[in-house]
Length: 234
View 1 (cartoon, rainbow, N blue to C red):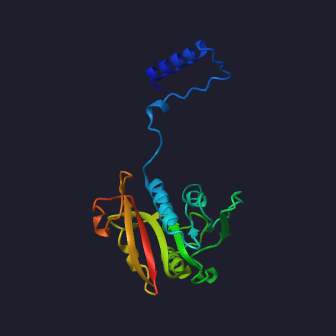
View 2: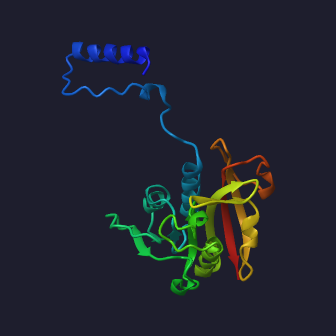
């Protein structure tokens, strides 16, 4: 800890006491005054806020989420509407009526009902399917099985919001996650017809690039985040 920051703390402490303040316990925090007001960058900040705004504007009849951050994206959406969430791991009662939970392995198609919702999301989750990190069964094709089951759940003309790490070349970083080349997702399905409605991405610096084409992703990207909106045709 720098001497200047310690001196600043002592000066502030003495000024507080001189002004009549009562201190019950010293608990020095030396560096917060040097920081920004908060973090407004990175994969989760941008994807959670962006997709939540899409859902707010579209206002689907039913929205189901698979595996996204409960404290981030799910809580954003639950602030203004009901959201049903699915995860391979259990979740204790959140205490919020707008959050409904079901434990299920989305790679296992036997438990997946067909055409049950007009809106579904899976943010920064599909890259983990089949790697065992979260207690899911090992399956090298887990991400593809999960993707097909997301589409299975969608009604015709329904909307899928999905995001995952992107890079110039696809790779498996076992068992943390997969990283995909941005256009690889277009080859994951052959039984459903889908249309890419919107694509945005977060670059290596954590900055958002809205409504771009897949070809706009820099060839130098190492660990970005692709945010896709698909429509299920027919």
